[in-house]
Length: 108
Image 1 (cartoon, one colour):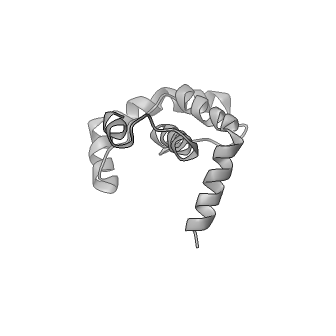
Image 2: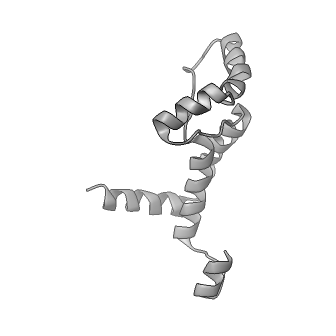
């Protein structure tokens, strides 16, 4: 932010900045999402949730992840992921429009 302010003379703002913030929030939390099917058995979901973060915190997982991905994704507790996914419903329409236009333009 300090470098941006020195170069541009103020804080970043506008639709590009808003879109970047939305994408960073989503990407940093749900980059690697693991979900069960709709209506998943509640006991199975609870067992998965209980084991998920500890499993992804092991040295064995991190070592394998680095081999495959070149880094080990940070596991997030399911409530945080659910909160970020739910927040996508509230992304301002102008940001959604900007992202759709950008994607369409650069997907050709």
